[in-house]
Amino acid sequence: MQKTPQSVGIVSAQRAQFDTPLTCQSGFVLSRYELVYETYGMLNADKSNAILICHALSGHHHVAGYYADAPKNIGWWDNMIGPGKPLDTDKFFIIGLNNLGGCHGSTGPSSINPATNKPYGASFPVITVEDWVESQARLADKLGIKQFAAICGGSLGGMQAMQWSLSYPERVRHVLTIASAPRLTAENIAFNDVARNAILTDPDFYGGDFYEHGVVPRRGLRLARMLGHITYLSDDAMADKFGRSLRSGKLSYNYDIEFEIESYLRYQGDKFAAYFDANTYLLMTKALDYFDPAREYNDNLDRAFAGAKADFLVISFSTDWRFSPERSRAIVSALLHNRRNVSYAEIASDHGHDSFLMQHDHYHRVMQAYLDNIASEFTS
Image: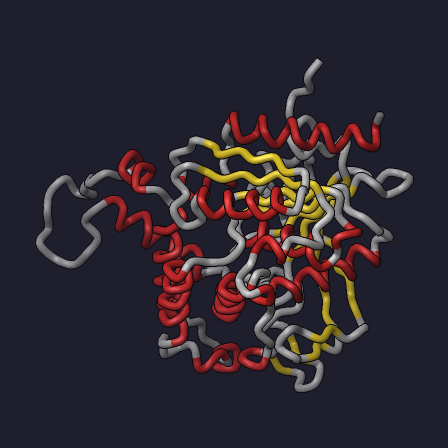
């Protein structure tokens, strides 16, 4: 009998401190740092049921459940994680964390630099996907997890999951990469650059050291989010939700908000600028730009995946034009070339890139079936 999906309920964040220096890909050495994370479910006796969730650009450690003092603050992937859900917490021990450089508790640009007793600001290093995987592996060490049952992520999170299979092939049995790509296209890099320039040219940015001036580059953040949000949606989704509807029902012949889509984008921009850190946004988009495992192999993705040992589930969405199905199929092709076990699903969805966050029956059934097979490895 199938269980009725439920919430994991009240959750709380945990903090791990690391005193062993981390040498970043840039050469910068972080002498010490902290990672904030949450866990859901129970780790089994041989610690074989752990799944790491890697977050996307604006994500964080609060992946499922809610806080006792903030019941409306529900985890960003709550529809996927919990008893009876695809990532079933009755079967798996699930970890969500806020990456280095983040602005939700882990060490990042707004954190205090112990060498100066001031926020890192502009001195915080550019972080890469490889750096994140290294820090995540250290968290796994601290939790006593030698090998993950799976590592899972969408978009930028999918890139981290892929990198795990390359950096630590013996430490992950399954990789679930969703709405992702083996590297960004020139168009995607261009979008990121425009978004970064909106922040960099904001007078309140102060070269990244705006904390000391008691201001926030809200205008830049707002514009960056508005631009980004357009790329996360599909034309069909925007047409269905907003069309050309006017707020007042008639044209105003000025430059104020007239169309409902304008109102929506400005709302999203204002909301984002109220809680997200500008330096973190710059770091996250740069990590996206830099990810390219084939670079060291003369752009040969087949060779880049030669060392991978995990089995893969790759999922794309039909209307995702920012991380198109073609990009996912390139991952599948490289894996098949290396005789890896890989399952691929291309889901018909109207929600564009944001589809990986949505409640979608076909998508969730694919995830459920694959994850049930993973669970059978340690429950049979």
